[in-house]
Length: 154
Image (cartoon, rainbow, N blue to C red; front, side, top):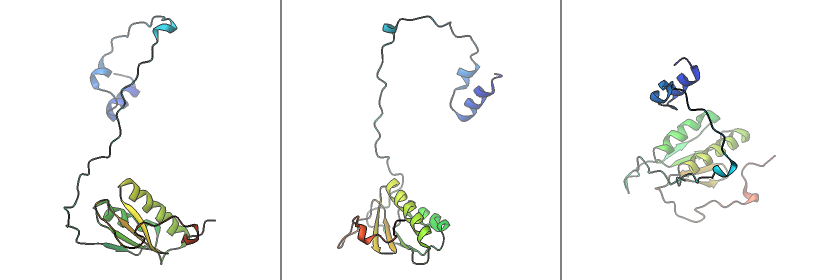
């Protein structure tokens, strides 16, 4: 196996060693007519919602994390807590508008990717709630209101 591409494919797990070590030459291709090429439908695997590896038991919610980020790099604390299934309150009052926008974009993607929700509590406070946490009250789901946008679009 002197081909570095084959070695790399084996290392990355993209090819089996048996396939790579089989150095027997492939039969020469033969000419086929256009009618010989019939499209075969490939099997389609439907995308299902993944099974959640760790879900807290019903009624096991015993904490809510409040984060007062000062810089965008504080997003790691938010992500780690939210991945554990803990609701997170984000208070952006100590951040610049540009960093706050970036952090809310990140938090929106995080909540979408983990099937949770993000809701605006006030103009600079947001609640990230995991999938298994129900939030009730008036206006539980933040509506897209262009007049109420906390950060003006430029």
